[in-house]
Image 1 (cartoon, rainbow, N blue to C red):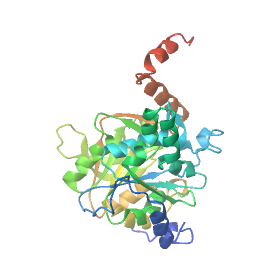
Image 2: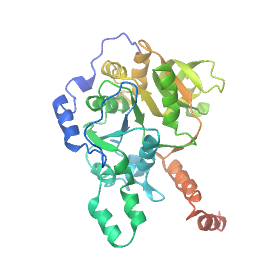
Image 3: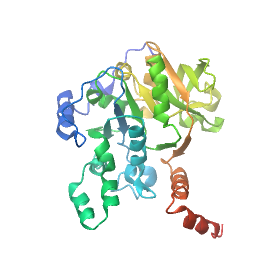
Length: 335
């Protein structure tokens, strides 16, 4: 890809999903301060507060289940898939969650909204634990959303969130990737960002036959004693196995500086005719450093049926209220 070629991004042309004024108005209309929060907190340049979660995909791999239900709301045991991702954001210290959605995804906003009626009903039924549980997340974060009107790729989804993010660093969480670790994956990226004041990508080693499914980075060591932090030299979206610069694939966690927005505006459609975030990162590399973190944790790809089932089984086996009976059930299956 010629990075110096003059391109026109469809977000700024005829396919602009919403005027800037509409996006800003929509955010102000639905943002809900956390209970007990007084006013708007003073912005700080050093703290990363905003998490962007793209959730506009149609979920075709899970049809017919996703015909009327957002794929992000499919449960793993008894929580929607997307709640695990939001919980990681909260545990990493984020305060504002911005969902990038599409038509028919209102259930996501409803799930994280405060439901006074349900809480009061549960309390009247002497179920205080459930009453606390259903509104736990809504008490800990402020939520907002913006529509991605057309499916133009991950890079485009991040770009339409620009008016809500503003001129500050932010996190991007992909809802298909559930990562379990002692220290949240995004918290690991934040630690590197605090040292380098640069964008940081979560990466993981993948087999050669799988590199064509991911964005892949070319890196050099930084001298990190655990060999987990690298400086990114290049990034390629879904390369052929014999053209991949490494086996380090970008996984669904990004800590990005606001410099990514001009890079996205200049990025032409790439693989699949979409605005690829990986291609924008290549442009960003021309202006500022980018780092990669080989994160410590177990990743589940809940975006495909096998990964979703694996997550469901393993999460159930970790539950104190389920693991013994469920393990006994599995032992008696005739496989």
